Image (tube, rainbow, N blue to C red):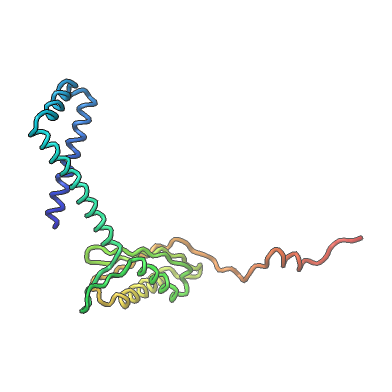
Length: 198
């Protein structure tokens, strides 16, 4: 399969290099207009050249279609985790794993908020977490605890997966806890004593 992909990519690159070189040559007047018109007229009148142009055009269309299919298949594979059960294949959406990681982070009290991005790569699952911590958190301890919790929960959830799970954490924000609910503007007005005279 990899050899097939490399062959297709090689053909694609060769064709686009030739097209690009032709356009550059034409724009720099390296190709005389008379020669280009003569070649086009010959290709239009000669049956064998018309067949060659037809086959090349159909080949380019098929090549583009194959590349689009391969790209979409690769993107689709990157959005799911698949494993086999005795009764058949199971696929898990990476967005479901991301939601699960966000809920699992609530077990760590020093974490205010977490956004997760899960990538299923070659032979590994990488969880990239962007976290917001409370100010009193000791960052090395909290991040280590968070990594172990996330790794344990994802391993439990995906028990049929053998790939190692890596958890990368980026502390994006440190927030202060508010000292209690602030009174609304209406409450402040009601609690302010009347001042003024007659």
